Image (cartoon, rainbow, N blue to C red; front, top):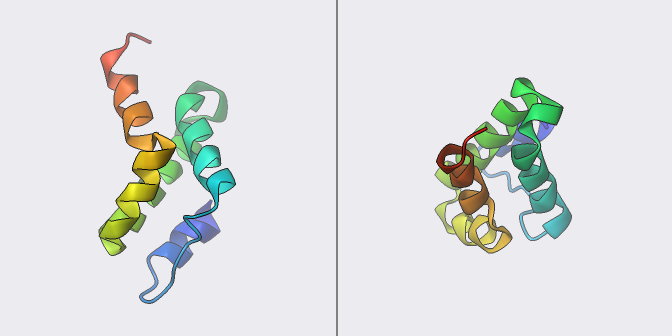
Length: 79
């Protein structure tokens, strides 16, 4: 994840967002944040925000995978 994060902030680089396995991985890290811990959760959410910041049209891919809804659901349900 750290490598992908570093690559995502390099100008002109593109992370393969059409890969549904990658998006499902990110979603799993968010859903099971207690299993993977705060560092992985933080890296995952930072990666998502960095990709959206550098490539705003990528939000559609995240929306299709249900990642925004999954992230927001963490704050609407008691833990």
